[in-house]
Length: 187
Ligand SMILES: C[S@@+](CC[C@H](N)C(=O)[O-])C[C@H]1O[C@@H](n2cnc3c(N)ncnc32)[C@H](O)[C@@H]1O
Image (tube, rainbow, N blue to C red; front, side):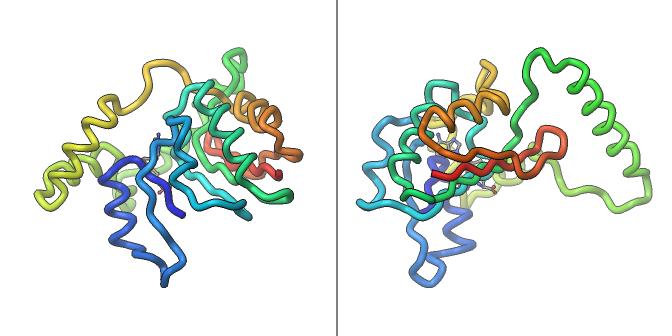
């Protein structure tokens, strides 16, 4: 099952992957909705994966989503979350050191080297000018009127705490580069 509430990215995903030889079903569901799991087939899953999607959710929505996932994963099932998960508000020195490292990394991309991949804003700008995606872009703007939430979303420790509270027995950070992280949680 591939869940996505953005008609643009869902269409791109479906166009790129199709059904993966009958193994993939695309689901139009809003993870913020308490009833989103009704759109899934009955039964328990072995694994769930999210990549750079959950930073749109507020604390209460994230806690509810993690409880939904805990209910729908079999014992021993695995949840992986790859996302930008921020530092704790009081980790000022760590955040400053990470910002310095990120700045140095950007400076190393000296002129003359191959240009880095396009920015997120440039990518969306191209999508917005593609007439083939006009209907999807209109619906997306209705569903996601703001690009990002105005309020801070949970930080790394907030994710770990909510996963444990939802019933995941093992929760570990298995990759971290700056605030780009991968969390693994075992049911
Ligand atoms: C940055 S994209 C990442 C897409 C893909 N997972 C990847 O890693 O390439 C974020 C995705 O999260 C989806 N998303 C954000 N909020 C969502 C929600 N409330 N319900 C379902 N999908 C959501 C967006 O539609 C978008 O496809």
